[in-house]
Picture 1 (cartoon, rainbow, N blue to C red):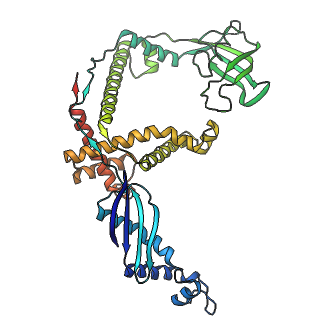
Picture 2 (cartoon, one colour):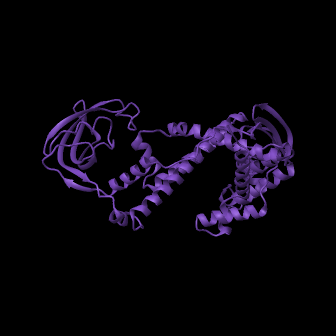
Length: 428
């Protein structure tokens, strides 16, 4: 099995002519016959007992050809691509048989998509804006403590007052559009914190000022981009019953409060710990913003025409990850699509920009690895396997069964390339 010819037909597309010798083809036909003969019936013979020549005479000489071709095809294409020095990235299309017989073997043509040519220049010395050292202000500390107070607030019934911003209300509601109730528009005994914007715009604000026991209507308009497409942009009326009002009472911030909400004994210790954590958060945020700036500038330096197949494959991968996250929340993809009114095609379109950026980044880093001759040692690869095994509580030998060596190697060298780029950055 080997390559006869290889010709570039368009950007990232080649047509290969591939040959399978008569000997290899006949051997594969024999394998197919031995695998299938037990299921074949020929008049005059017991089932599974007919010789190959009788089966071919009865059903036609090419009875085993299709399965033989399907079996030989992947290896034949792989060998031909290696001979041509091509790295394939997708399924092959426009398959065409040139010759096919026991005497001449198999010759076929196939068009393939290959890894694109990538150019990256000036990736060392990328300029980024210099950011000032972060500081934690008294206001930052005050807001953080206020948030902890809110989390530990006590709710007190307020039967005689009216609803105010920040109150927690208990309501029943029934929604309708043009006097027709809609699915998901009704509920009872719902607690809602006014001002948190948990419901659509205008819903919460129209509850303010009402008393316990009141029944009233509020009018809202669903956003044009609302996740339930059948409701998007529609005007709705909700009949409200206000069952109760609760007011938040914030705890006093003192040493006793600190003991209740942390492992510290004094307010001073607690404030110092919060300040340290807030400073770390700010530093991490600045580091992430800088990384994002470097990434965007690096992406702009990558000159490549990306095959659609690579983007499609990456989109599938991102959707699989999304599906795993849904499962962790007790949902599945089918339920999500139904609830949001989203079609699978639209989901692919939503993930396409992220997939395109991810593929471009990977190709750019791969090119940097080639230019800089970046490699991964056997020790580094083994260490990475150990880290993967530890993260999923598995044995290294088990991880090696489903995580390919080349994928681990690619991950290591890509990280090295990214560190090289980051370490050469110039602040302006």
